[in-house]
Amino acid sequence: MALASPSIKPNHLLKKPFLSSKPPSQPASSVLIQSKSRPTIIRSSVAEAPTTVNVSREYSVKSVKARQIIDSRGNPTVEVDLVTDNLFRSAVPSGASTGIYEALELRDGDKSVYGGKGVLTAVRNINEVLAPKLIGVDVRNQAEVDAIMLEFDGTPNKSKLGANAILGVSLSVCRAGAGAKGIPLYKHIQEISGTKELVMPVPAFNVINGGSHAGNNLAMQEFMILPVGATSFAEALRMGSEIYHVLKGIIKSKYGQDACNVGDEGGFAPNVQDNREGLVLLIDAIEKAGYTGKIKIGMDVAASEFLTKDGRYDLNFKKQPNNGDDVLSAQSLCELYKQFVKDFPIVSIEDPFDQDDWSSWASLQSSVDIQLVGDDLLVTNPKRIAEAIQKKACNALLLKVNQIGTVTESIQAALDSKAAGWGVMVSHRSGETEDNFIADLSVGLASGQIKTGAPCRSERLAKYNQLLRIEEELKTVRYAGEAFRST
Image (tube, rainbow, N blue to C red; front, side, top):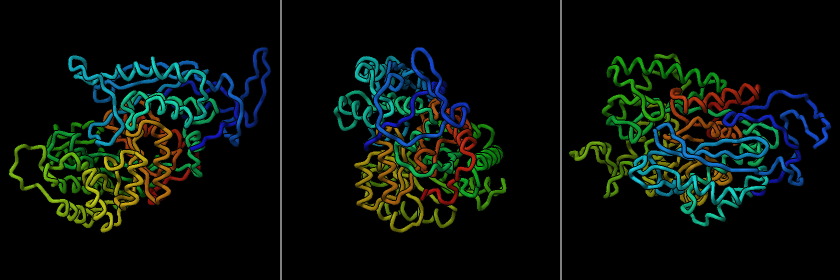
C-alpha cells in the first residue's frame, strides 16, 4: 500500500503517550510564528490533503527504546518508546487462546524467570537491532517503516525478531505519524487506510467467560452482548454497563457470591454447566434491564481449543477423562449452532470450528444468515483471508494487530475483508495493557464493531473510555448500530 507524505508541518501537542485524542484547540487557521531557530506552525487539527514533502527533523525518528513490562494477566510484554520531537509509547497485547498460524510471539523460554514467558530477547531485538536502523526514518510513512522491519526479519511469521518486537515499534510509529501531522491517531489511520467516513463501532461486551478464559465447565469461550439498538457509542456503553450489573445480580442470586468473580476479560465465570444456560442468562439480564430488542448476542466459541484428535469436538474438554457424551461431530455441532440462532437473538459467531476445518465453516456459512467471524481461522493474515474468501468459509474478520505484527498488514487485512463484503471486528487480547490503540483503529478504519472485554477492568475500559473521548470530539459522527457488518 503506497502512502503519501502529508504537507502538514509538525506541532508539539500530542505529548501524552497513550491518549490519542484531538490536540488542544488552536486557532481555526494556521499562524506562522517566527523564531531565530526555525518557524513553528500552530494549526487546527484538521488534516490537509496529502502531498510529497521533504523530510525534516521533526518527522524523523530520534530514538527507539523498548522495555519489558507486565500485562493484565501478570505476564511480561513489550513496551516501546519512540521519540521524534515528542515521546510516543505503545504496549503489545498477548493472547491466551492463540491460532497456530499467528505470527510468532517471541518469549525467552527460561523457566526460572517468569515461567519462561520473559520478553527480554524481543526487547533486545528492538534496542540493538531495529532501533539503529530506524533512526532518521519518516514516521509519516507507515508502510515504508513496516517494510524495513519486515525485510530485516525476513521470515514468514516474524520468528527472527518476534512479532511482539516488530508490532511494538509499528504501533509507536503510527502514533508518531499522527503527532507529526498534528492530528488525532484515528484521523491518521483514516488517511493512511483511505477510509472515507469515520464510524463509531458497536461494542461486543464479553460478559460471560468460558473456554480458556475461565475455570468453569463452559466449553465456548465468550458470550457477548451487542447494543445495536443504541443511537450513540455513549448510549451503547451505558446499556452494556447496566446489563452487566443486572447480570451480576442474577448470577449472585443463582450461583452465589463466588460466581461473581471475573475472568481475564472482565466477564463473569459462573459455574454454568451448559452453553445454552449461558445464553439464557444473557436473555434474562437483557430483559430485566429493559433492553429487549435493542441488544443482540454474539459468541466466540474458540472451537480449536476443544478439537479432538479424531476431528470431533468435545464440549466437556475441561474434564478429562470424561464419558464422551458431549463429544460431537462437526455436523452435530453445526446443527447445535443453527438451533442456537433459532432460539436466541444471535447475530455473530466467532470460530465455530477448528482453524483447519474449512468444509465445516463453509457448510455453516451457507446455512445461516448471521456473521461468522474468523479469528484462529484467519489470524489477521491477508493470505488466510484470501483463502477464506475463495472457499466462502466466513464473512467477517477478527482484526488483532498482534496476530500479524504490523499496522500496515493489519490495515491491509481490513481492506481486503471489506472489499469482499465482509464485516471487520477490531479486537483486544486476553492479556492487555492500558494501551488504547485499538479504539482509534476501530474508528479510523470504520470497522463498525469492536470487542475489548466487559465494561470492567481498567485495561478494558481504557479502550471504551477512549472511544467516548473520540465520539465527543467528532460530535456528529455516525454510530454503526444495526449496520455494524456493513460500515
